[in-house]
Length: 276
Image 1 (spheres, helix red, strand yellow):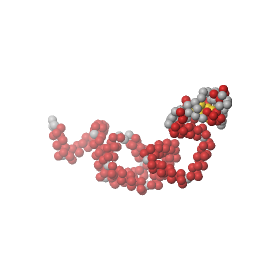
Image 2 (spheres, rainbow, N blue to C red):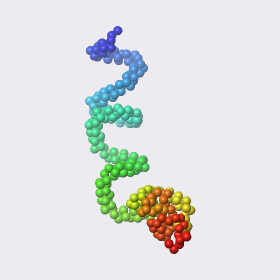
Image 3 (cartoon, rainbow, N blue to C red):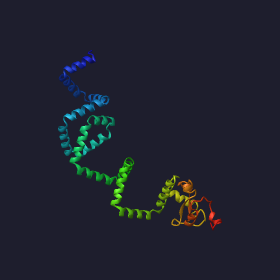
Image 4 (cartoon, rainbow, N blue to C red):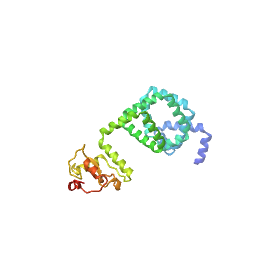
């Protein structure tokens, strides 16, 4: 029986005979031929992909012309086939193919963008309309990342934008403070704590919980409070090392808050000491 080496040499010398014999055999045994071909492709996937890409680079114009013609005749089946191919594409093969043909891919992408700018913009607008929440979340994340990586440019851009829209900014800021008094209070106390060096932070829900815990009564004089009359007090003052965590917050009326100032006093202090 001929050895594998001898068979390879014979096929190399007699390519036409070998090809003819294989065509005849495949015609007689189509199922077995397909099974063997799939098995070989699975074992040599990178070879087939690389060979296909080499062939495509040589016959690019001819292949693309045929594909465009077929797409015009049967757009939906081809589009679905492309989607399926992209979904099942091997990431490693994709990466290897891109690295091998990076210059061609980038050149093709650039040429396509230049020739189809309006089409791309329309498609992007359509996608943003369908996925507005996803797009906003992505833009917020990207903007935060950019600001973190470029603090100086970000500050310059913000200053320029504010200077150009100062009146609008002030009006919007005033309107926001009027509509969100609780959030404004949270931000203000957080800023004061940060400046004092105590740190810490809390949410509006945590602050409301603290008010409910003390039954909406002033911590120092037991006066009944509402959302409009309550003020936020740090039990251990920020100046004396207190934090802005919810555990250090107590509800207080404005009068007691001003009288207490930066002192450290007990609950109900102004009930037993009204003159102080």
